Image (cartoon, rainbow, N blue to C red):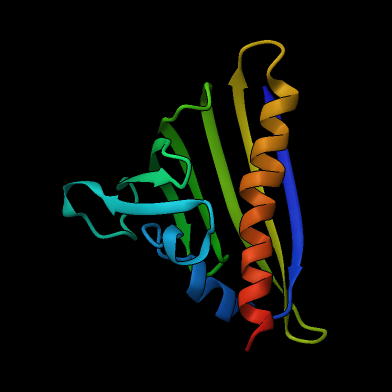
Length: 146
């Protein structure tokens, strides 16, 4: 099992950051790597069990299932059902923690998955830096402009 963990500090309140990332169908509005997204079967995007179907800017198609969503803990957990990355048993969590000193947010994004032997390093880099840190960097830019 491969584990990826990325963390960052965002100069905005956890309430503000959560309002931006909470929508399970909202990736295209804040993550630069995502081109479009839709929730299958017209289900609400905050319904546990709903499936988002989206495309990355490089043309990849990914389907993910919402496993948990907590407004109290500012967290979202999801699994990948289909993707071109070659991962199995992929489960990820995006979690925000308020930093009371300066009204900032400690953001954590982690994942665990299985993959073919020899691909661990490349996938860890792609997911940890490309996906997770790429998303955090976009959030920092967004809130830095306020």
